Length: 304
Image 1: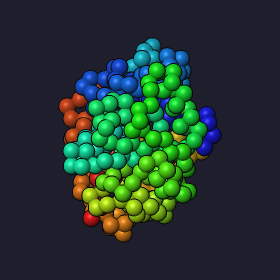
Image 2: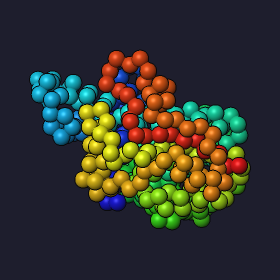
Image 3: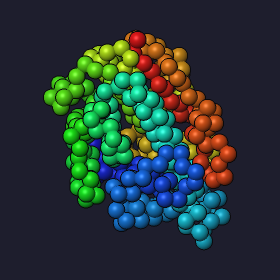
Image 4: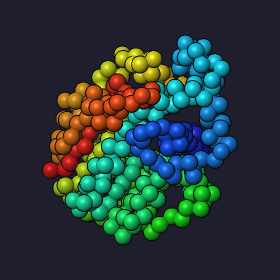
């Protein structure tokens, strides 16, 4: 992954969270620090690119709101960009905070990007070690963003630079103070870009050296990923955009396949959220465009 690619991916994700914080009510996931990690120029440039791309997303909406670019931006952000990241982050952090109450001591964020959890929960500084794993270029980009935002890196936050899709950095984690204590992993927005075999290997590696009770939250695409069009073709658009960006979506799973992969690594599914359940939990009674994506599921699995 090149510097500009890693920067753009993490920036677009931060843009979605910052937009939600600024404009959407009620909040699904309130990342009130996202705006600190994205400059006004970046926010404006991403907004313009989205608005100018409306013909790709939906020509009818482009025509309907041609005199109202802000409504076009709202439509693209709420229909296409934000539903998956907002709901999965809200779910993951809800589970994590409960796991901390149950004794989790370490939190490993795989593909962390511009994640702000550590800075939104300073009260956990003495109770939770946090390890962010990502590409070196992304982490350098993030450190510069934190510096610009005058956010000091606390002692409990550790950066482990690694392409974890090729080799899991057990030694690098250990060097940063990771040990055999109850651990929580998040793997969000990653599984669909790995092959089935890579997903299986990664889960295996994650849980090889952690005690029972350790757990993971991740999202995955179901067997309809490459057939389902979704509202306003948004599922099809997501697949096309991933392909065009050079990071094609490689895998989708039936529930049974996910269950088998987890079972082979000694994990049991504690909770499974289908798109219908996600919609009910996070998007109910909204009056805007936000709704759960048709093919994306969430899993919380625990080591036996």
